[in-house]
Image 1 (cartoon, protein in one colour):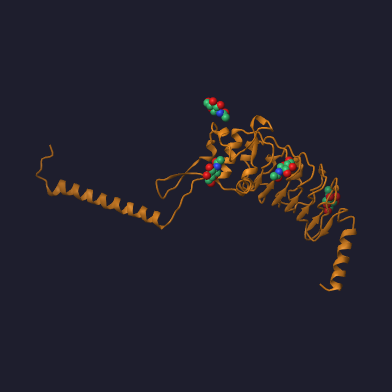
Image 2 (cartoon, rainbow, N blue to C red):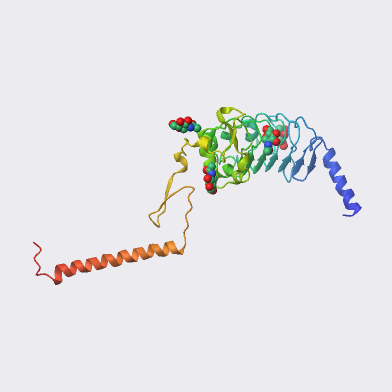
Length: 291
Ligand SMILES: *[C@@H]1O[C@H](CO)[C@@H](O)[C@H](O)[C@H]1NC(C)=O
Ligand SMILES: *[C@@H]1O[C@H](CO)[C@@H](O)[C@H](O)[C@H]1NC(C)=O
Ligand SMILES: *[C@@H]1O[C@H](CO)[C@@H](O)[C@H](O)[C@H]1NC(C)=O
Ligand SMILES: *[C@@H]1O[C@H](CO)[C@@H](O)[C@H](O)[C@H]1NC(C)=O
């Protein structure tokens, strides 16, 4: 990069940076990104810059001291795709954080990745995330927080894509059977959240932090739990008589199809042979007395 280039960049940066209307103080605003990581922020401004084009897509605010977000913060940034609020002091994630992120025209959020790890979050409004409002959300990191229980019914109702990218390890969850059923299912589906953090999935027996067990190592505690029926819905596969349960592996290949046709042809041959024998019996050998 020549020094002229650098000067032009620096000038651009200063124009963007010094313009109080468009960029919050202490933050860097570049193109579709606002970056305010590790700058000792105690709160974010009332509203975020709404760039004409391209719109704000990435907001990095990790490693600060933020405790709460204002009601209107996300009102004009409905095109946001990435939100990193990890390592702050958030205690609650309010429902309005997500409502504000809906794109106004069509009511859809563009959010893809959200990081809330390493806060002090005790509650999260899972019910406010639904397929028809957040169709692209594929990463929701809530690990290393202070949630003692999750509303498992709401978690179970989350869109598949969200469940696949939901990180909840290293909280202070109370061991129970609803948790067991969900983690069991996620493990069977081989989600990365489980595979990559198997040993960080801990829970407290009777809620006692001194009796913390590793969910995937200490299975004894869960031996009385039954896996709920919702993950055992049979799927009928028409090509054969096999009944397959969700989570089971099924392999379809030429062999299966061949086997099926082999069976079919065998059945046909058997049928015709039987018919022929019957005809033979009735017509060709008429003098046998059937009575
Ligand atoms: C959103 O943008 C509109 C117009 O662009 C502006 O009038 C309004 O104050 C903005 N609201 C917030 C909360 O930034
Ligand atoms: C687990 O979370 C606590 C805070 O809740 C944090 O101090 C600790 O470093 C985390 N552990 C891991 C392995 O991430
Ligand atoms: C997790 O899934 C693996 C197979 O993918 C299985 O061997 C293991 O027993 C499962 N663990 C639990 C706790 O269900
Ligand atoms: C499981 O059930 C048995 C028999 O009902 C009981 O003795 C045992 O304490 C139960 N274990 C747990 C971990 O709840």
